[in-house]
Length: 90
Image 1 (cartoon, rainbow, N blue to C red):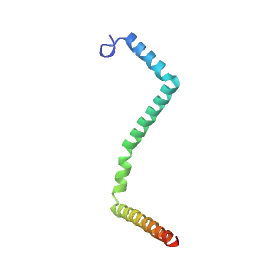
Image 2 (tube, rainbow, N blue to C red):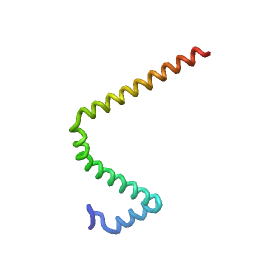
Image 3 (cartoon, helix red, strand yellow):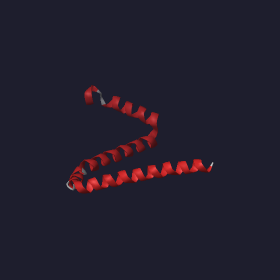
Image 4 (tube, rainbow, N blue to C red):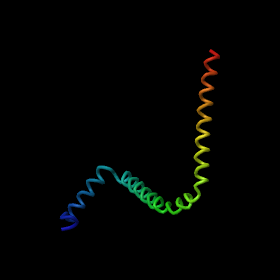
């Protein structure tokens, strides 16, 4: 008996069916996608150390947030004023 009561022959038959259903090309792409996902997960788990260093300077974070908010407000006001100008030309 093999893994969980499944023998080696059953595993080989399952593998053969999977290869017939998906093909080797698709299995290769699924494997590489899975590998990239694991690699990305590992790098994301090691990034909190870098993010902790960024969190130590709250003034810089507040300045960045206020800058984003002001740029969003400016773009919204420009869009509104542009629409009203178009209506007056008609």
